[in-house]
Image (cartoon, rainbow, N blue to C red; front, side, top):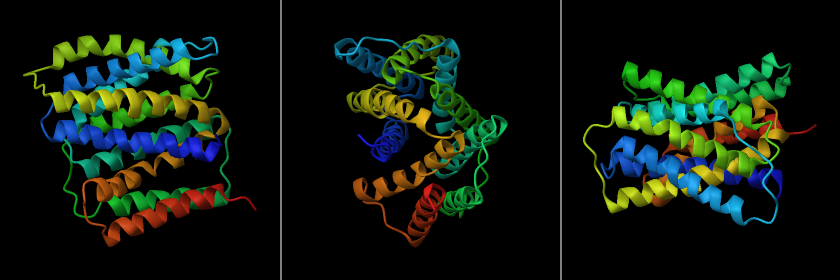
Length: 274
């Protein structure tokens, strides 16, 4: 499969994960801590089965640092989602991811071209168009949690660029992150809310939209500069909004069309070759 196709699959998985999380938590079908644990555990099971039954031998291992970043993202994102609106959350999350990865790339000597910088500016403008108008000031605690979630995801993505076996590495990280999340869930859980629909959404979120999508993302990261990987992820909120139009029959607004044009145009410009 080509690099662009793999990137699109990973980004679609991230967008689907956002929709699944909204459906479970926003609909009060599952309490946040149960959702987080089931999500990580189901991702662990699916990835372990894929590693077990594939033809190639296992050669990659995760690390406690990567697992801590993954668990930190899952915990912070889940808790933030109970305190902050979706629009503000998307802006803070992906802005934080972008800033973390973009800065790391600069520190490591990456220098985006002027076209890349212009493309990045256009994509960020598109994200602002999508999320900012009409938003009230977000809850400070929720905002800080979402920023922390974005930083954790940025660190996790950067660490994944060194993986020689993305599937095995992701499976190992999910196992470690699940173990690390259990005491947090035990301490933070209040009144459990469990429904069959909520559990189903959490399992799909963990096994498909998280586990498989993360493994695909790990497989493409070594072929992308950190700043390019950060830029590509700015498309996720727009993809999520488009999916809501198709799946949830939400209206296609001029603001969404403008955001789509800016984000896709910015990404296309930054990747265009002269």
